[in-house]
Length: 284
Image (tube, rainbow, N blue to C red; front, side, top):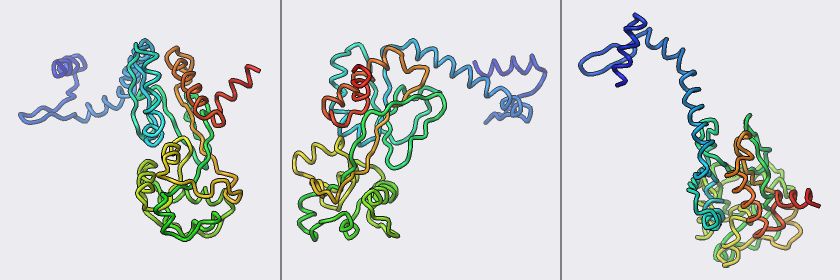
């Protein structure tokens, strides 16, 4: 069918757009030029069509989420939302990649930001969901095998576990007054849930936040280093953001999920739920 349309277009324009052989087809020079001229318009038509379809779809919710948050908190909670909204289809994708909201890759993105401000693209809107303390954690077995850690500076002599770079530890140490020329080393495991698993298995010390690591701390598989010690405070904070397209912010489906999420975080972490605190402040 496409081939027939192309032949019709060639006949209508009087220009050869496709070179055809017995084994392949390719664009002619005029075909390449024509494609470049119409590609943006075709993309705009396709995106507008997808936009109309998604606006009319009130049964399917696409959520992208950082893998650690998805695994350790969201996956255990989202079933409650599903039970209360059995008419919905929910797709939760754990990924660190930022989605293309313009092409409707997702409806919602949860993004965690540490140390640097959030860079929000045009056409998007966000709200802070929670500010979470970033803490150093390790397994009891690892800590028993190492010299005591009495101050944040003592961590420089430990085996530090990193995600894709050393920035996380550099920010955390700076928040605790350690600005030395740091020669940080240790394994790079690229994702937070991988560093957490490595810490559980005694491979070193990692950074995490209370929303992600709470079950491991409660079970005793991990220990928060310096808990209750004023030299380990103030904590550096990580911020979880809820991000969606500005023009869909108040759509019934996204508003329903956002309100549920704010209340779910407030129920588990009343001291962390920034959005819930703002709601209470406005109500008061």
